[in-house]
Structures are given as structure tokens and as C-alpha cells.
Image (cartoon, one colour):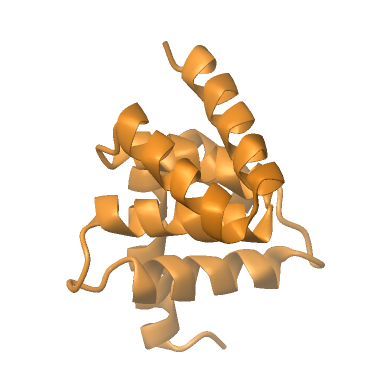
Length: 128
């Protein structure tokens, strides 16, 4: 049986996740979860979004910039695409993203940064 705290944390995380990534994407991820990946969806929603993204110490915009840098470093194109959309929702400009990706080129590697630039360009074209 799910504890009330877990349910509250999930609902809090779900609201933030929808605001940042878009309700359509998030609701689809939750709806398409099965017995295998549902625990991961719940963990992500509770702890990434309900615990970390709700903390007052950093703005959502700052969190988005940090995520773009980390995801570039990890070379996770699917997640970068998702978080570019979220960053736009959080007020990150194209110019700010460009600066993050240039910075990651030096510290994380040019190939990873090139992939992030490529992904961002695709997202920008889709969100015009």
C-alpha cells in the first residue's frame, strides 16, 4: 500500500513534470508505463521532480541549464531533446543554450556538444 507521503510526492512531482516537459508528453509516459517500467516512472516523478525540482535553492531555468550540460556530458540525446523543450518552457533562450553547449564542448567533448547542437536545432525547427 502506497504511503500518503509517497502519493503527495508523486502528485507534486507530476505537476512540476507536466509544467516543464508538457502534459502531453508526461501523461503519455505515465499512460504507456507497464509493469516493467512503471516503477521507474514513479521513481522519476517522485524524486527527480517532486523532491529535487521543487527545491527552492535554484530556479527552474537554472536547473534546466544544469541538466542540458549534464545530459550533454553523458551524451543522452533522447533526454537532451526532452530537456531542450523543458528549458524553453522554463525561459532558457537559444543563446543561453548555445553558450551551455559551447562550454560543454570544451569540458565534455566536441562530439557530445555537436550532438546537442544538432538536437537543439531540430527542436527549434519543430517549435516555431
